[in-house]
Structures are given as C-alpha cells and as structure tokens.
Length: 194
Ligand SMILES: CC(C)(COP(=O)(O)OP(=O)(O)OC[C@H]1O[C@@H](n2cnc3c(N)ncnc32)[C@H](O)[C@@H]1OP(=O)(O)O)[C@@H](O)C(=O)NCCC(=O)NCCS
Image (cartoon, rainbow, N blue to C red; front, side, top):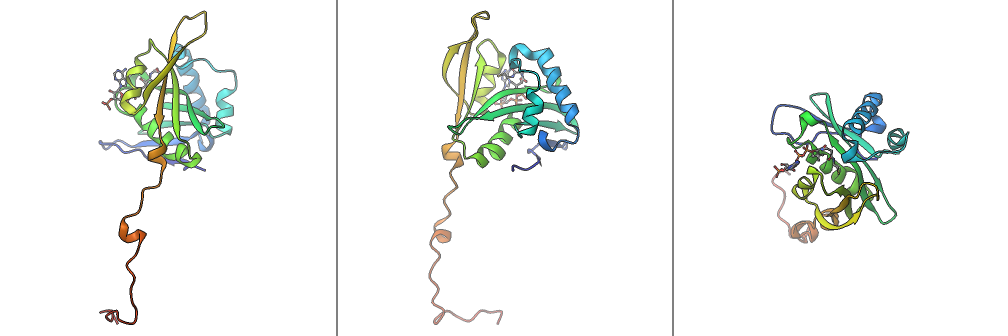
C-alpha cells in the first residue's frame, strides 16, 4: 500500500498534505468536492457514472490535496493491464490554481502509486480547447497523439504521456557500494577504538 498521507514540498510555511481517499476520515467532504468539481468544471474533467468516486475510494484510486487543512483538489486514476497509469480526472479549486497544487498531485501519483505498480507511463486525454494543455508539458508530459471526442461535441482530444521507465529504475549504487573494497582482515590495521 502507498503511504496513506504524504507531505509534498512547499516553499512557504504553509502545510501541504496528500490524503488517500481510502484512509480519509473525512471521505464525505472529498466526495462533495468531487461533485462540486463536476458541477462547475464537468466540461473540462468529464462526467463519471454514479458511484464512481465511492468505488475509487474503495480501490485506492483517488487522493486529495489539503493546504493548511483546506481541501484544494484531487486526482482520480486507474491502471491498465499494460501497467500504464491513466489520469481520469485532475482538478484544483479555481481559487487555488497556478501555485503548484496540480504538480503536487502528479508527483504523488508518480512517487507513491506508479512506483509501487512499476508503471512505465502516465497518460491523460485532454480536450484540445482546455487551458490545461498548458499544464501538462510543464509537468513533464509529451503530446503523443490525438483522437476525436464524442461526435456530438466535435472536440479533438490530445493524448499527453509521461514516460517513467528511467525514473522508475532504481539508481545504480556508487562504485564503492557496488563493489566494496576487499578488506584483508589478517593485514588490516587494528581499529583505533579497540
Ligand atoms: C489543470 C489544473 C489541474 C492545473 O493545476 P494547477 O495547480 O493550476 O497547476 P500548477 O500550479 O501545479 O502548474 C504547474 C505548471 O503548469 C503551468 N500551468 C498550469 N495551468 C496553466 C495554465 N492554465 N496556463 C499556463 N500555464 C499553466 C504553471 O504555470 C506551472 O508551470 P511552472 O511550474 O513552469 O511555473 C487546474 O488548472 C485545473 O484544475 N483546471 C480545471 C480542471 C481541468 O482542466 N483539469 C484537467 C483536465 S484534463
């Protein structure tokens, strides 16, 4: 299991905390925030079937970000059999945007969940008329394709991907750790502590 909460870095004295929905003691507040997001920004984040957030809580696919205990946003994700992580919804309250909250959500997804699942890629479909298309490249995503959305909307959707393979590989240990120098106990000088 990923940590139930984590503290993203902040450059101010404010506290940032990420809380996994599965362990959220105020889960109802989170669901309310998700409903609020759909009502106000459904055009951007898309509409989900009834019960999707509760289901995501149960399957640990949803987490939110609190700034000084104030819930400012959330991220809903899933993974597929190819070990890709799909970002289904990311949303930050309109009065809390452009101060690195979205980035903190992506970093948590990467560091806690993608690492755990050994995922090699994060991906997100984004309607091309959204300002959010300016967010994805800033947090390391590349536009790798597009497709038409539903016929009645006539919108194209960009596919934004962030490859993780290199980042997911464990760093190679420094040479002295990898191949410790052989110590000949017979000739080694006595330890100064004995
Ligand atoms: C998209 C969204 C999640 C971004 O969250 P955010 O907290 O505002 O983003 P951040 O502050 O973490 O931004 C990270 C980087 O992206 C840039 N960025 C984010 N939104 C941007 C915008 N609208 N225009 C230009 N740049 C933007 C920031 O300037 C920052 O760049 P920097 O680190 O180089 O300075 C947020 O705007 C949102 O919830 N929008 C409405 C819902 C939505 O569109 N969701 C995505 C649908 S796919």
